[in-house]
Length: 194
Image 1 (cartoon, rainbow, N blue to C red):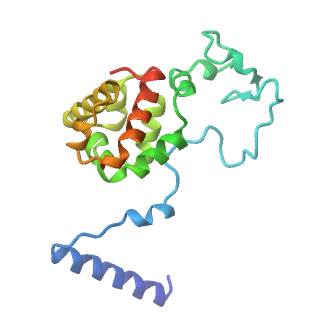
Image 2 (image 1 turned 180 degrees about the vertical axis):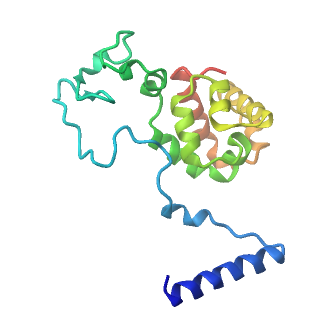
Protein backbone atom coordinates (compact mmCIF):
# COMPACT_ATOMS: atom_id res chain seq x y z
CA UNK A 1 0.00 0.00 0.00
CA UNK A 2 1.44 3.35 -0.98
CA UNK A 3 2.05 6.16 1.48
CA UNK A 4 -0.76 8.24 -0.06
CA UNK A 5 -3.26 5.40 0.44
CA UNK A 6 -2.13 4.94 4.05
CA UNK A 7 -2.57 8.64 4.78
CA UNK A 8 -6.03 8.70 3.16
CA UNK A 9 -7.05 5.62 5.14
CA UNK A 10 -5.76 7.11 8.41
CA UNK A 11 -7.64 10.36 7.76
CA UNK A 12 -10.85 8.47 6.94
CA UNK A 13 -10.59 6.42 10.15
CA UNK A 14 -9.89 9.55 12.20
CA UNK A 15 -12.93 11.30 10.72
CA UNK A 16 -15.18 8.32 11.53
CA UNK A 17 -13.88 8.11 15.10
CA UNK A 18 -14.26 11.86 15.70
CA UNK A 19 -17.73 11.91 14.17
CA UNK A 20 -18.95 9.00 16.28
CA UNK A 21 -17.28 10.35 19.43
CA UNK A 22 -19.22 13.62 18.99
CA UNK A 23 -22.51 11.74 18.68
CA UNK A 24 -22.99 12.48 14.99
CA UNK A 25 -24.11 9.93 12.43
CA UNK A 26 -22.54 9.15 9.08
CA UNK A 27 -24.86 8.36 6.19
CA UNK A 28 -23.18 5.63 4.17
CA UNK A 29 -26.26 5.07 1.98
CA UNK A 30 -24.80 7.25 -0.77
CA UNK A 31 -22.03 4.71 -1.23
CA UNK A 32 -24.46 1.98 -2.36
CA UNK A 33 -23.51 2.33 -6.00
CA UNK A 34 -20.09 0.93 -5.09
CA UNK A 35 -21.40 -2.36 -3.69
CA UNK A 36 -21.93 -5.44 -5.77
CA UNK A 37 -25.30 -7.06 -6.23
CA UNK A 38 -26.56 -9.35 -3.45
CA UNK A 39 -29.08 -11.05 -5.68
CA UNK A 40 -27.62 -14.36 -6.79
CA UNK A 41 -27.20 -14.79 -10.49
CA UNK A 42 -28.42 -17.95 -12.22
CA UNK A 43 -25.20 -18.28 -14.18
CA UNK A 44 -21.69 -17.08 -13.49
CA UNK A 45 -20.07 -14.08 -15.13
CA UNK A 46 -18.85 -16.28 -17.97
CA UNK A 47 -22.41 -16.34 -19.37
CA UNK A 48 -22.70 -13.87 -22.23
CA UNK A 49 -26.30 -14.53 -23.23
CA UNK A 50 -28.99 -17.10 -23.58
CA UNK A 51 -27.83 -19.85 -25.94
CA UNK A 52 -31.37 -21.24 -26.28
CA UNK A 53 -33.50 -20.90 -29.42
CA UNK A 54 -36.52 -18.55 -29.40
CA UNK A 55 -39.05 -21.41 -29.18
CA UNK A 56 -37.28 -22.89 -26.12
CA UNK A 57 -35.86 -19.85 -24.27
CA UNK A 58 -35.63 -21.32 -20.76
CA UNK A 59 -32.13 -22.58 -19.91
CA UNK A 60 -31.90 -25.19 -17.17
CA UNK A 61 -29.64 -24.28 -14.28
CA UNK A 62 -27.06 -27.06 -14.31
CA UNK A 63 -27.29 -28.38 -17.85
CA UNK A 64 -27.43 -26.98 -21.38
CA UNK A 65 -31.04 -28.18 -21.76
CA UNK A 66 -33.45 -25.59 -23.19
CA UNK A 67 -37.21 -25.88 -22.70
CA UNK A 68 -40.29 -24.00 -23.88
CA UNK A 69 -41.89 -21.57 -21.42
CA UNK A 70 -45.15 -23.54 -21.37
CA UNK A 71 -43.26 -26.39 -19.64
CA UNK A 72 -42.07 -24.25 -16.73
CA UNK A 73 -44.00 -24.73 -13.49
CA UNK A 74 -46.27 -27.37 -15.03
CA UNK A 75 -45.55 -29.98 -12.27
CA UNK A 76 -43.36 -32.00 -14.63
CA UNK A 77 -39.59 -31.96 -14.25
CA UNK A 78 -38.14 -31.08 -17.63
CA UNK A 79 -34.72 -30.00 -16.34
CA UNK A 80 -32.52 -32.79 -14.99
CA UNK A 81 -32.06 -30.86 -11.72
CA UNK A 82 -35.74 -29.90 -11.43
CA UNK A 83 -34.96 -26.19 -11.77
CA UNK A 84 -38.03 -25.60 -13.94
CA UNK A 85 -40.28 -26.63 -11.01
CA UNK A 86 -38.49 -24.87 -8.11
CA UNK A 87 -41.02 -23.27 -5.79
CA UNK A 88 -39.27 -19.88 -5.68
CA UNK A 89 -38.96 -19.79 -9.49
CA UNK A 90 -42.63 -20.58 -9.96
CA UNK A 91 -43.60 -17.95 -7.37
CA UNK A 92 -41.37 -15.30 -8.98
CA UNK A 93 -42.84 -16.00 -12.40
CA UNK A 94 -46.16 -14.48 -11.35
CA UNK A 95 -44.79 -11.57 -9.31
CA UNK A 96 -43.67 -8.08 -10.29
CA UNK A 97 -40.03 -8.29 -11.39
CA UNK A 98 -37.19 -7.85 -8.91
CA UNK A 99 -36.26 -4.64 -10.75
CA UNK A 100 -39.80 -3.26 -10.34
CA UNK A 101 -39.84 -4.19 -6.66
CA UNK A 102 -36.35 -2.78 -6.10
CA UNK A 103 -37.25 0.52 -7.78
CA UNK A 104 -40.44 0.76 -5.73
CA UNK A 105 -38.65 0.01 -2.45
CA UNK A 106 -35.84 2.42 -3.25
CA UNK A 107 -38.32 5.22 -3.99
CA UNK A 108 -40.08 4.57 -0.65
CA UNK A 109 -36.94 3.59 1.25
CA UNK A 110 -37.07 6.25 3.97
CA UNK A 111 -40.21 4.86 5.59
CA UNK A 112 -40.94 1.44 4.09
CA UNK A 113 -37.60 -0.27 4.74
CA UNK A 114 -37.43 0.46 8.50
CA UNK A 115 -41.17 0.00 9.16
CA UNK A 116 -41.92 -3.08 7.07
CA UNK A 117 -38.59 -4.76 6.32
CA UNK A 118 -36.46 -4.25 9.43
CA UNK A 119 -33.86 -2.08 7.74
CA UNK A 120 -32.67 -4.71 5.25
CA UNK A 121 -31.23 -3.55 1.96
CA UNK A 122 -33.95 -2.81 -0.64
CA UNK A 123 -32.32 -5.39 -2.92
CA UNK A 124 -32.83 -8.15 -0.32
CA UNK A 125 -36.41 -7.07 0.33
CA UNK A 126 -37.15 -7.01 -3.42
CA UNK A 127 -35.77 -10.51 -3.87
CA UNK A 128 -37.70 -11.74 -0.83
CA UNK A 129 -40.97 -10.29 -2.14
CA UNK A 130 -40.36 -11.87 -5.54
CA UNK A 131 -39.82 -15.42 -4.25
CA UNK A 132 -41.62 -15.70 -0.89
CA UNK A 133 -44.93 -17.55 -1.05
CA UNK A 134 -46.38 -15.85 2.03
CA UNK A 135 -45.66 -13.45 4.86
CA UNK A 136 -44.14 -16.18 7.06
CA UNK A 137 -41.78 -17.22 4.27
CA UNK A 138 -40.83 -13.56 3.74
CA UNK A 139 -40.29 -13.08 7.48
CA UNK A 140 -37.99 -16.09 7.66
CA UNK A 141 -36.10 -15.11 4.50
CA UNK A 142 -35.45 -11.53 5.65
CA UNK A 143 -35.22 -12.13 9.40
CA UNK A 144 -38.10 -9.77 10.20
CA UNK A 145 -39.18 -8.89 13.72
CA UNK A 146 -42.72 -9.51 14.97
CA UNK A 147 -43.26 -5.74 14.74
CA UNK A 148 -42.27 -5.76 11.05
CA UNK A 149 -44.64 -8.66 10.37
CA UNK A 150 -47.45 -6.83 12.17
CA UNK A 151 -46.76 -3.72 10.08
CA UNK A 152 -46.71 -5.78 6.88
CA UNK A 153 -50.12 -7.22 7.77
CA UNK A 154 -51.43 -3.70 8.39
CA UNK A 155 -49.97 -2.45 5.11
CA UNK A 156 -51.46 -5.24 3.00
CA UNK A 157 -54.80 -4.91 4.79
CA UNK A 158 -54.78 -1.15 4.15
CA UNK A 159 -54.09 -1.76 0.46
CA UNK A 160 -56.96 -4.26 0.20
CA UNK A 161 -59.38 -1.91 1.97
CA UNK A 162 -58.19 1.23 0.19
CA UNK A 163 -57.45 2.91 3.53
CA UNK A 164 -54.19 4.87 3.59
CA UNK A 165 -54.42 5.90 7.27
CA UNK A 166 -52.46 2.93 8.74
CA UNK A 167 -49.61 3.63 6.30
CA UNK A 168 -49.67 7.36 6.98
CA UNK A 169 -49.25 6.44 10.66
CA UNK A 170 -46.07 4.58 9.61
CA UNK A 171 -44.71 7.82 8.09
CA UNK A 172 -45.64 7.06 4.50
CA UNK A 173 -45.73 10.35 2.58
CA UNK A 174 -49.28 11.07 1.41
CA UNK A 175 -48.10 11.37 -2.21
CA UNK A 176 -46.93 7.72 -2.08
CA UNK A 177 -50.30 6.12 -1.34
CA UNK A 178 -51.38 5.21 -4.88
CA UNK A 179 -48.04 3.65 -5.81
CA UNK A 180 -47.83 1.74 -2.51
CA UNK A 181 -51.40 0.49 -2.81
CA UNK A 182 -50.81 -0.56 -6.42
CA UNK A 183 -47.63 -2.52 -5.64
CA UNK A 184 -49.05 -4.24 -2.55
CA UNK A 185 -52.17 -5.18 -4.51
CA UNK A 186 -49.96 -6.54 -7.34
CA UNK A 187 -48.24 -8.80 -4.82
CA UNK A 188 -51.55 -10.01 -3.42
CA UNK A 189 -52.97 -10.58 -6.90
CA UNK A 190 -49.91 -12.65 -7.80
CA UNK A 191 -50.55 -15.08 -4.94
CA UNK A 192 -48.70 -13.56 -1.97
CA UNK A 193 -50.51 -14.88 1.11
CA UNK A 194 -50.93 -13.17 4.44
